[in-house]
Amino acid sequence: MASTKKTPSAVKVEAPIDQRETFVSLQKSFADSDMPVEEKLKTLYALQAADSEIDKIIQLRGELPAEVAALEDEIAALKQRSAAISATIDQFNRNIADAKLSIAEHESLIEKYQRQLESIQNSREYDSLNKEIENQELERQIGEKTITDTRIEISTAKAELDEVKDRLGIRTDDLKAKKAELETIVEETAKEEEVLRARREECAAKIDARTMSAYERIRQSVHNHLAVVGIYNGDSCGGCFNTITPQRRVEIASNRKLIICEHCGRIIINPDFE
Image (cartoon, rainbow, N blue to C red):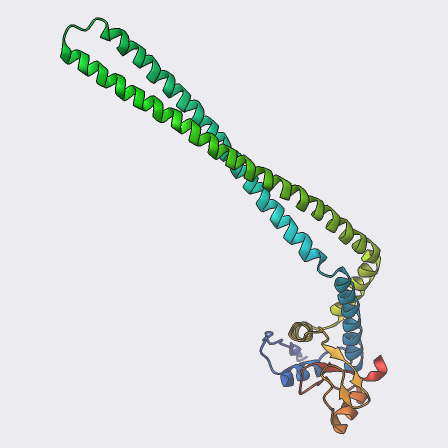
């Protein structure tokens, strides 16, 4: 008995997603999908509806997230500045302590040389000791000037530190208030957002990667983030409001293919879905 050889079934090869691909290739890929075109269009509409509601929630928060982030950055910078000034003051105090030790050493040497003057036998040694005393006195005066100047610098640094701490306190209170305001809004919309995001994920899971990539690309390229729109006023694109030809309107109503607005690039769906 002759054996029959099975031929392997054809495997569909997906071309890699190209962000620059034309809408013609996207339309072909859309039509070749396993999901019926009408169902896919309805899913795209439901996805856009969920995204639009999520956008509204995000808009409700307004600039608060950005303001909170900016305050956190400013507070971090103020804390760093405060730490740097405090470190500088500490170094100034160490410099003063070192200068005081140096002055004490110079004074001790001055006393030593003055005692030695009492037993000098010749003018050469006398002149040499006097020169050393003058040098030590000069060094002592330099040390005293260093202490005086450093105390002035400490006073200036402390004044700046007080200003930084005052501003830090104010901005910390501002951050606390902004966070409380943001948390209140987030809490009020958390459940709604959770439901919407679950709905979005459910829709996105049904759509192929190529179509999702195009959808996200369109959303990012238009100011209102509407990638999927209906027909406005019976004959115009709901995104850019340019007139749609009668033939195009028939194709949109048939739910048999993906229709892209030739003016704004948005996906136009059957108004009946709305």
